[in-house]
Image 1 (cartoon, chains in turn orange, blue):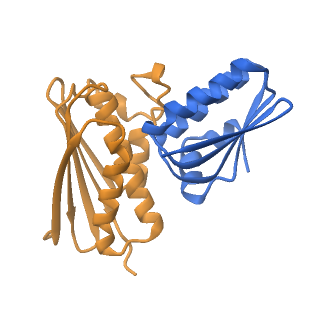
Image 2: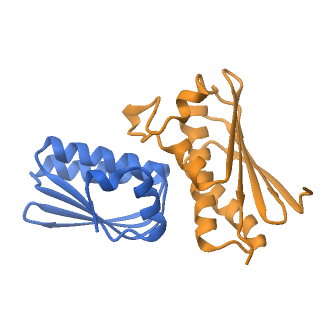
Length: 142
Length: 102
């Protein structure tokens, strides 16, 4: 499938950028005329991935987060990359309600939400090198 | 920006939230509610979410944390008026089994 449009941004690992990132992704996806519910799902999944990069990837320290959005005829692929600490055990991280930071009152639902709100989710991570989340959402034809 | 308004009636505290509830916003809500919890004994905490336009799993963490505190204090907690998008996240997390959502 050929991409019809693409964009890439980078921003600092700051919690105020969580809303910035999800609004940018939703604005870009709007070109495909998704439903309000589809857009809300996309925003939630992007918010989860960016929050993970800030809290877990960079452990709330300085760092850069990269977001790439690729539009296809009827879907969007979002890639969110950090060069932070990486995930020790991806399988464990994917278990609903598992969190490595219970002291921060994290619910451990981030990956479960990304998985259920998007149509596909891939996690690539290397300890000490960073994490790349690739997720795709299909939009219904209207 | 998330706006927080508190309304206290006897031992019931209602917290009205307006805006987007994400990781960036939760710390202020957490602080505000927890301060109320130590100030005066409460029997019920009500979170009114009618004006919350966005919530992700950070909101779930906030709710579960406050629920546990209320339970420790012998009180209860309920969630009122979540919009459809918020309800979807609440249901996914299984919170509807822990507390009343109306």
